Length: 371
Image 1 (cartoon, rainbow, N blue to C red):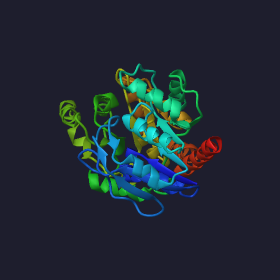
Image 2: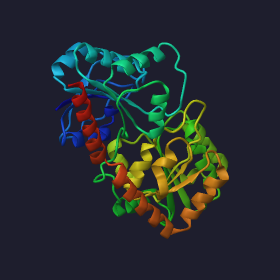
Image 3: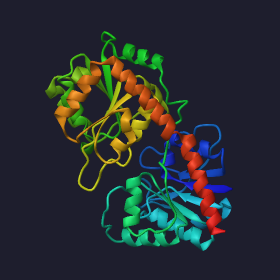
């Protein structure tokens, strides 16, 4: 079976692990934008994944970018199925689904959207076209699947996360923990709480900085960057914790395993915003695979990802977040227990190998029905 897998997400090098896992089941070729925003795409990791950059228009625009020469792209691929790793209301999904329909190639789309929304023109019409012409859809979560059904999608549908983790790279690493403490200085006995992701208001990072003021001998490692960084740095000064907050800036996806394995606790205190809740929280499964205890808010998909393997608090509840952190900071046995549960849950549910096997099985059902 030949699969053409088209995804802007694959500009992140670590996400291509999924293609390597898929290649154990099907012949898969990945297509990524030849550039995306300011940063282009991360260098391609070696081994097993056939990935080709392809020219795009409007790069950096999530739902409005388009690929050039899509007729040639589809014809040259000789694909049995085209996996369009984009929301059904995106312009690029319409473009690719239309090209596939013209060439008689079954296509499928992917959806994270977990809130029912009225789509403004032309996105509603785009989604309607994709619903009518795609051979199937994959929802990243049960909530996303419900949104698709409520929007009128009646076709074949599977619930499979978009990306998993490579459990061989994201794993417990005591040496990384020791190296980080030496790098940070101090006594070496401090507990390190981490956050990873965009620095934007809806992620609730400001709550972690406030909580730190009541947690002596604890450090906060903030992995990532974004428009809120300057304000968060100022907040750390106001709270008197600036010497215990470390901003790393952007971290390459291939470097994340050693950073995450060095943490004692990973926190994702998302508060959300009107029209948006956390759709998955990939940083959670990466930390869980590293055997790190996790805390998250009950926002969107976070509590479903964590399950019984971590702690969930109400979004925006500063007191509950601080107390949950205080309990974990003061209880090494509990941190170890939750870390073990987290690793087990990640291995059972969120590995690339499992996701690839489920995805390949869905491809076969799509091709069988199309035939």
